[in-house]
Image (cartoon, rainbow, N blue to C red; front, side, top):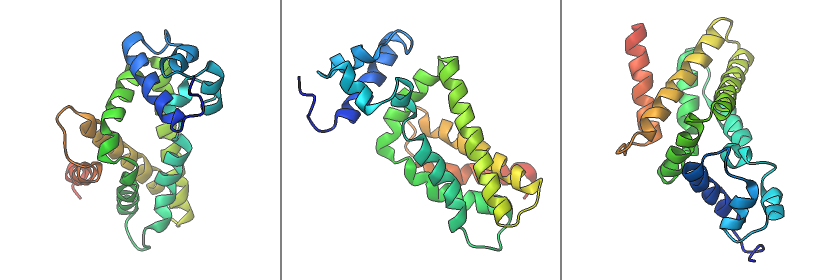
Length: 188
């Protein structure tokens, strides 16, 4: 077995996603994932603490990128503009080459309530973090929470569009359009 070959995490992640799509998340074991790429179950657990982390690995980095981007936005802007600029700088987390993997990941999440719940909790945590960063900047309540939650709603809608079959625009472009659409909705 080639358990010491480089790229084990990536190979396991790709294999897991394909097996989840083919057999279902609940019906796929860590041993089957590892075996499909010529690795042992023990090696799987060296890379991932459990099956969920195949789909949610990177969540800590995602949150940090989204939340800490608020710190790099210049002072003096309206709260929603701060969030828009912060999220725009975080779109680098979604390069075009990740789109197909993200589409498949979303297919797996969307048919598994437990995984979808975790995804929604992750997004709520990001919104809470953004709200906290806004308050650190002196944005009072309820403006900080409204801006953070509105920004995450824009992100989720933009992400859904980015995942659509045939969609070719960048996440940054779509997100910018969605913030403009929100402005039109609220009359800004």
